[in-house]
Length: 328
Image (cartoon, rainbow, N blue to C red; front, side):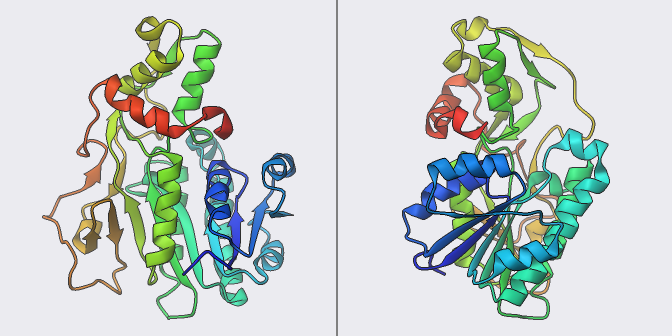
């Protein structure tokens, strides 16, 4: 499917992803871009940068609002979610209402509107979930990937990624605020590992999924990883006047937090196809013969991905990340 000439809806479109994908979309001449979110203030702020877009205030929990937003749409990027682990741990039913019921509403209305491709954004936390956010996202993935079981014109798929550098709520903006306030950088566990994916790469993954979806797939972008201690060291060296002397304080692991990110589990590895930059996890009901089946027990995690071992290795990615302030 081509973006040029298409009508596009982004749910949760005022977040980090929505702002970043907007810049990419403008280069490809869509006929219309419609932003759907419940935050009026963020819509006003985004309108200052992208006045040519349409803005619709609404919540994915309300099917009637989505029906209006889906009217005439060809392509949906479904980014609306409650995604912060601590708040979802405190309010798990709220996570369920947005991430599961809201996604079901989006699927129903997309089908009814004749949407061609529907791409939902997921997370590593949906793999072997330990927390309410991950559990709700795992349910969302099952929901999305089951939509094509009985056919239909709309192609539904998911993308799954781990830590997106500089995105709202991620650790790098936190480190930067702590540096600006002359506070120690807080890390939970030094040996904790995280993937390092730039926002541009996350947008690239979504566009890849849009072009290659048949129905029911989960697309994963390969990325390097590092320990949280190494990441903190790289950030302080780049942004702090104290450099490597800026203090780091260990706070301990948080409820529901994983030591390592897993993007493809051992069961999914039995039905993947692999490219240089991507894994595609195919649905059980449509596994291709040419799949790159892996040995039992194999997973793709931040503990066994290509590791960036020194702060100097991470600095080029921090440069590519762009201005952090854009994503706070």
